[in-house]
Length: 162
Image 1 (tube, rainbow, N blue to C red):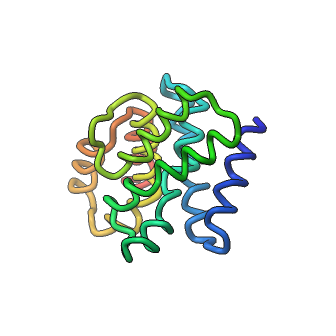
Image 2 (cartoon, rainbow, N blue to C red):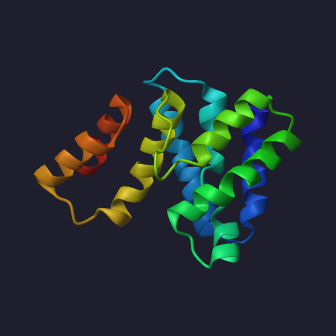
């Protein structure tokens, strides 16, 4: 899977010394690959979108002085597009990945299997930091409402409820 290594390399170049964001992207990729085992979706699209989902965060901070989700969704797709095109990816895949990157916080205008897997993988990484206050029934309710794949819900239940 040379494409995976090439994308990881490009993501690392973009993030430079920002090890926290590199680690986040790699963790999202790990969960996305795990979720993929139980879901039907295009592996290449999921892999690319998982690696590149936050690729616009530094540009958002530079241009807008903020890493707010709307700025990440605005700045991420052009960077993802440039990387994917330079690596020779098919234009249809490039467009699909850019739609996922441009909606990975808001879920606006997209709800397909590839998006749902990246959404759940990102949530799995973020829940311990952003939703640590949820316990028991509250966490169970959160998981059932917010996660979008059966595999993502299963992993979340195992990780956060047991």
